[in-house]
Structure formats: C-alpha cells, structure tokens
Length: 408
Image 1 (cartoon, rainbow, N blue to C red):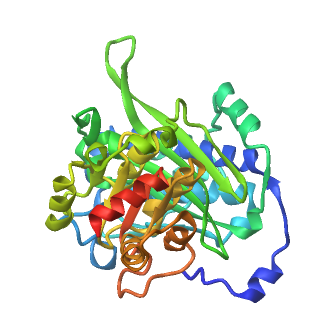
Image 2 (cartoon, one colour):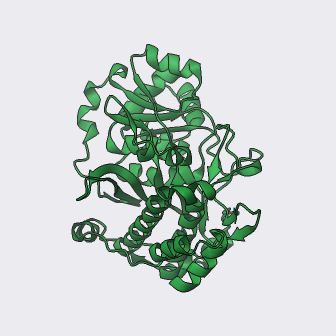
Image 3 (spheres, one colour):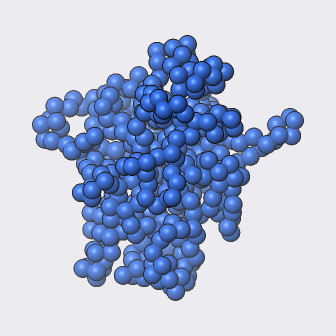
C-alpha cells in the first residue's frame, strides 16, 4: 500500500465533481450495514467464539497482550470497499483499511473474504468461512445484500447542509471496520465515569475517513456507533441501538449533523486548566499524567482511539492527548474530518510541543503545520501507518494554546 502522490498522477486526474450529499449518504448507508453485521455477529455466541482469530506478528498491536481480528472486522471492511466502489468506481484502489481480507478458520484454512455478485453467491462463499454453517452464512449474506434506508430527517439534513460538490477522483478512504475490538468482544454494557462512557460495547465504532490523496488533509468522516444505547422490546428484552454522525470540511465549506453542538468559543475566555477535561490512554506516560493533574485538569482513561475522539466531538472532553505512536491512520481519519468541520483539529503531539518550545506566541496558521495527514507513511519500522508523533485532538484553538503551556 503506497499513497505517495506524484505530480504526474495529480495532473492525470480529471476534475470530476460529485454531489457531496450523495457521497456521504452512501457512506452512511454502508456504515449502517456494517453496524448491523457487528450487532448480528456479536450476539451469536457460539459462532462468535468459534470464529475469533488471534492477531499475530505484524498485525498484533504491541499495546495489548492479546489482540483480535474477528470475522466481523473483515466482513465490514470488505462490505465498505464493495459498496463504495460499486457506486463510485473512482475509489477502486484507493480504499484502505486496518485488516487484510484473509481469515483463518478453526481448521487452519486461509480464506480471502469477498462480497460476491448476489446474496446466494455470498452465502455460498461464507459457508466455507463458517465451516458449513448454512444458517449463519445466509444470515450474514442477507445483511450484506440488504438495501439500507436512512431516516427522512437524516437525508433532509444532508441535502440542506451538504449542498456542494466534492472531487471524488482526488480522494481516498481509510476504514477501521470495528475500532476498539477488545471492548467489542467484552460484551460489557459500558462503564461510566462522571457521565462519560470509558469502556464496554459503546466504545466500539465503525470509522470511515475520507482524505485528499495529494495533500493528505481529512475531508469527510462518518462514524457509526453500533452499541450507542439500549432499549427494551415488547418482550422486555434489551436491544442495542446505534448512532450515526458525519462531518465534512472541504476548502471554505464546513458542515456536520451533530445536534446541539456546543459553541465552545464563547467559553474560551473563561476556561483555565482546572476546567479542562482530557481523554487519555490507560498506558499514557506517568509524567504527562502528573503534569496534567498538577495543572488542575480532569483526566479520563478511556478505551478506544475512535471513542476518545468521539468524546472530543461530543464536547464531553476538551482534548484527547496521546504522546506515543500507538494510534494509526485508520483510527483517526474519520473523527479528524468531523472535528475539522467543527473548526477544531488533530495535530501531532511531538510537533505541537516542539513548535511551542520554539515560538513564544503560536497562532492557528503555524499550528496547522502540525496537522495529522493521511497520504504518506511514517518511517518507523513495522509501524508504516502509525501517527508517529502522537496525537492532540481539540475543538478550540485558544484552549489548545493554553494546554501547550502546561505540557511544555
């Protein structure tokens, strides 16, 4: 996989534009199909236990003693790739993801997961993956080939807000099929700390991020939270319901579908470090934790990169801070685009601190040079697509300027 972009390639692209609302609508629909797969697979216990494959080697995330790739991960990634390319052929070869499409069943057979031309063919293909379990294969094929309908209000918001075109032939996609796989496997209803969900099924998310091939700048993001909240059916049984959100930031255009989004700038002049809420990883450096706590900030150890970023989007925390290179392009791209649509950003932790140490009064223009980008690899061995310099996600530039004073 190499997204390094040459001038020759750039010149060869035609300036094909397409309605942005139709493009995001397709992404929302395939995200919902993916969420249905995640919910269906998670609660077929016998098959869920049977089909878990432990990651190893280059695919293993060194932060965890055990890290897993499930059939749901692979299916979601291939469904997104298939459905998007069917609608927009210009993305062929420009959809990238965390997972390979290879899955090893319990007999040791390595199978390339594919979405076939119709439901029957996909079911036959999945029979080899599920080791002859016709019922499971058919159930999954039904979801994969179902026609998703968005709510009327949702499509109306798309038409009203996203009324400009996007240059699809200049864009590419990062997919994280099911972010926070460990929490997805846990089946925990979720643990809260001061009103913020910090672990459990609600931390799992389908992340679809769109970026510009030449500049690497995030353009659009869709996040689907398959296990957002629980309701009861007629038999009083608990059922998980999902949530979809999106944002687009392209040139002078910014739009999103968040309800009651806070206008943070109005409070910027009154915020001090003692008001800051900061999402951290449980393995964040102790000196950084001590530094933040001593400044009066409230820190939350929260599971999942995507879920931490979602807390920034929702305004539940002011920042997500990660000082090391344990997040990846597929983890951050979708949320980064949504945060940009909210006039915030996601920057490299190391680069932002280096800038602050060199420049007394940094401004937005200089800080944007530290923005994460998604088209080039890093140069760290075995971490080709990691965010090498760490991450700081935020919705308010003035607040970030103050945070850097405490971190430096």
